Length: 425
Image (cartoon, rainbow, N blue to C red; front, side):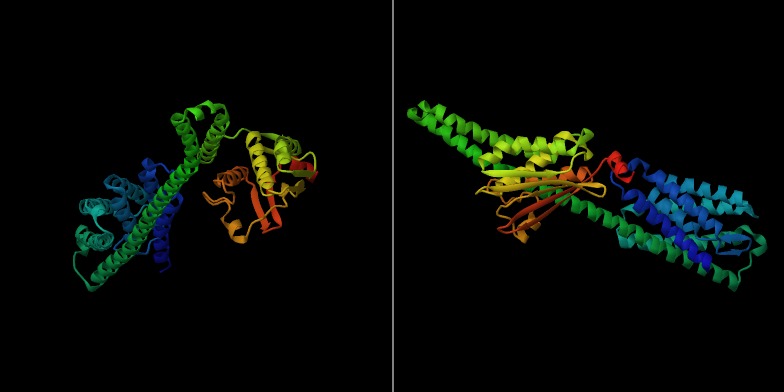
C-alpha cells in the first residue's frame, strides 16, 4: 500500500515540477519543452519502477504506464517512444526474468497509445478526461492479458487473474484521471493568466495613449492658437517676438512630457559605480537652489559623510532632484525643506521633509499609481520613475503625509560592501 501511494506521489510530483519549475518560468524556451518533459518523466519512471506495487506471474507491477500515457499524449509520439525505450533500459539494469515479454508489452502499449492519442489534443477538457481514463484503464487490462497470452503455462483463466485485471486497470484509470485533471487545470490557469496579463497590457496601453494625448493637447492647443492668431492678424505677426517665448515654453513642456514617458517606458541601461552619497546630495541641492529661491524655499541639510553606495550617477541625481522639486512645489507660500542623510545598519537613509500642503490618506494611497498626480499640471510619471529607480537598486521609498502639515519622504538604499565591512570591523 505504501508503494502504491509512493507511485502516485511520484507521478504528481513530475507533473507539478514540470509545470512550476519550467512552464511557469518567464521567457522559458519553448523548443526545450519536450526534452524537459521527457527528462522529468524519465526520472519519474525510474522512481515508479524502483518501488513496485506487487509482483504477479513474475511480472513487476507499478504505475509506470500512467507516465508513459502522459508522455505520449502531451509530448507526442517520439516522446512516448523515447520513454518506452528508457523503460526497457531501466528494466534491463534492474534484471529479472521474462525481459522479452516486458519489451513486447511496452512497445505494444506505446503503439496502442500513439494510435488513439493523435486526436487527443483537439478534444475539450471533459472528453480528454474520459479518453485518457479509458485509455489508461485499457492499457492496464492489456498488460494483464498480454502476460497470459505470452505465458502458455498460465493460459487458464481464473478468478484471481480477473481480479488482478480489474484492480490493475482501475488503478491506472483513477491515477490517469486525476493526473490529466491536474494537467488540464494547470494549463487552463496558465492560459487564463496569460489572457489577464494581455488585457492588463492593452488597458495600460490605452490609458497611456489617452494620457499622452491629454497632456500634449493642452500645450499644442496654445501653440496652434498663437500660430493661427499670427496667420489671421497682421498686427499679431508683428508681435512675434512677444509670442515666441510662450510658444517655445509650451513646446519645451511637450518635450518634457515625452521625455518622462520615455524614461518610464524604456529606461536606459544603468552605469553602476561607487558614489559618495553626501557629495551627490550636495551637488543635487546646488542644482535646485535657484529653483528653491524662486519659490522662497530655504533648504536645510544635515548628513553624515563617507557613506558610499553603488548606483547610477545620473539616475541618483534624477531621483534626488525630482523629490526635492516635489517638496519645493508642495510649498506654494514658501517654507523650509529639510534634507537628512544618515546610516541605519547596512543601509543609507535619505529623508526629505517639507512644510507643504501635505496629502490625505486617499491621495497617499493613490500616489505612485499610473497617471495620478496631486499637481494641476502633473502626469504622475515623475514619482513612478523615482519608484522604479529605487527598485533597481534594491531600495525602498516610503511616504508619510498629513494634510496641512507636510510630507516626509524616506529612502533606504543598501550601502556598498566595503562600507558594510567597515562598520563590522
